[in-house]
Image (cartoon, rainbow, N blue to C red; front, top):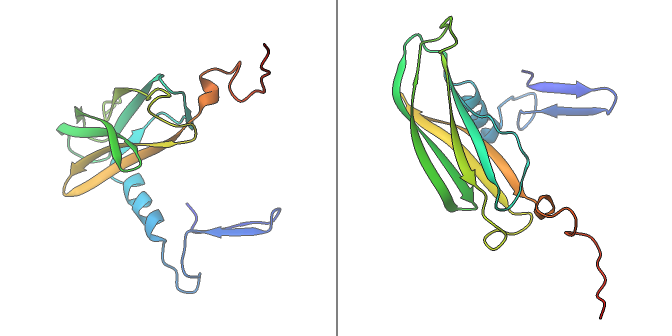
Amino acid sequence: FSGLSYSKTGGATSDVLLPDITTPEIRPYTKELFRCAFARLGIVVENYSAQAQPGKEMTFPVTLINDYNNDIEALDVKFTVYKGDEILYTETKSYSVNAAGAADGSDLATQEFIYQIPDKRNIKDGEELLIIAEYDYNGENIYSQRKLTIDYSLTDPVSIGKPTEAKS
């Protein structure tokens, strides 16, 4: 991880610091994402699709990665799909994961959440869905999130978005 990066080819400097490098402070949004990304009990939604087809069923594997020296038993993980502020779907599953360093890989636990994307009658082309998987542990809420953009062209690639001619 680098707080300040430089790209000689493009001549651009990028950073996660504000207001400037002389008084470094991580941007609040970035700080929140780092808090979740570096949690000792990690969570990740392992579906990296950027677009979603209306009406299609999608699978979202959600994995917990335990870096604690103790087993985690019966931890509830909530999976929620939002369209703006509206909750379209929510489901909770219980996870158990062994302590860090388990030789058999049982310090990871994955379960799948299945969600059917709304059909064209209920969602517009270009709208975004926000997928959040989260848990509460030791007084902290930790989450992983993904954004999906509805893409009608995935539904009917033969006709959508292509010019047509009316004939009588």
